[in-house]
Length: 67
Image (tube, rainbow, N blue to C red):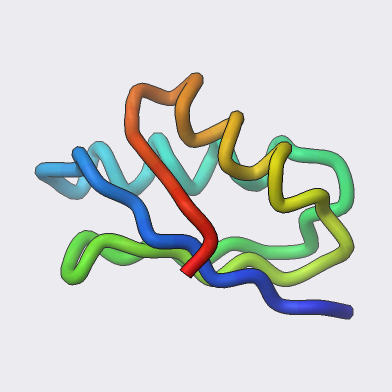
């Protein structure tokens, strides 16, 4: 199982964190996702495509890049 770290911008509250976590966990291949408000990031475990993770975050309304 691999681990992908993302830098996420645009989240302002715990609702944002929960929304982003749900979006990431819906991506095929994701085993788990831990999202933090400060400093704004996520650690995703599994075999997901990083581009799919970034797209899921964008669809949730935030910006992401591989950290």
